Image (cartoon, rainbow, N blue to C red; front, top):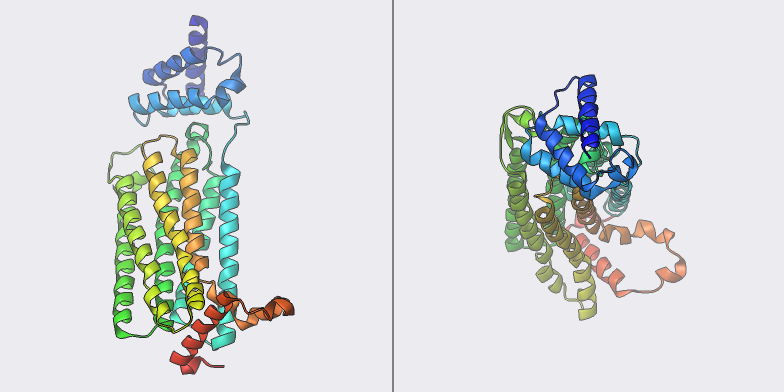
Length: 383
């Protein structure tokens, strides 16, 4: 065991010198402590590198006892020792989730715009806002995939190349901001869609008030994310002295308000749907369409649970991947639930076999009733 410690000390000294960094005693102590649990570090390097319990123990020790500059030594040593060992990560699940959700969402945007123009020969404000959301959602997807494939997001924190950490934090900061930017037009588009198909001054006031709440809360959280640290560069550069607001606190407040707004948006159209003077079966069909938004609301609640679970972990680049799945999936549900009605419009009937088109499903009748109601309240949209 003593020989292993001496060998480790020599290796750290040589590695630190070759990388032009200064080794620290606290990092050596933490690695030596870890060797007590895994004395076969050098003789069975692959197993030691794949031992997440050992790596987590050393990382927690370094994180607690060493400052940011001193943490570079064990990070670099680990990268030198384990950089070529194939270690299981969650990169591909994150990548697949991002590619799938962004692709399907963009397809739904195109189908929505095509069906809207085919029926009304013009676009509404809700269509414009959802296109804006789609543009920013592409940006969110690009940032997400860049962090996954280039910077190591989805891998254990101790398996990430130390030279990539600053870039990873920078891209993640931009991704957080773009997520909120996507959230604003998505919810606004849903509310504008309500305003287009449901008349009534009282409903209009409630919808406009909700839109104002969405805009104000969104802008507030964008500024909170941008200026979470003073100076701002403290978000991604941990080597400088900075004062930062707890990101977990911002996430808790933002998540709570998002859930509240989701609930309001979810229940807002239900009374109006009941007033459409349809039979119970058709009313339930219409309510079912709008009620699918409850799935998106549920993912928001689950997201809050994951925030609590990973907030105190130092391995957030790996454990946070579940939370990131919910971020992507939550945007995906919000954006595509909004587009269910347009996908039932006339332009897509040729894609459905004649025998199936002749079957009058109550859900199809309910959707048709919404569009008849829309044409009745907006005569200029008739084709």
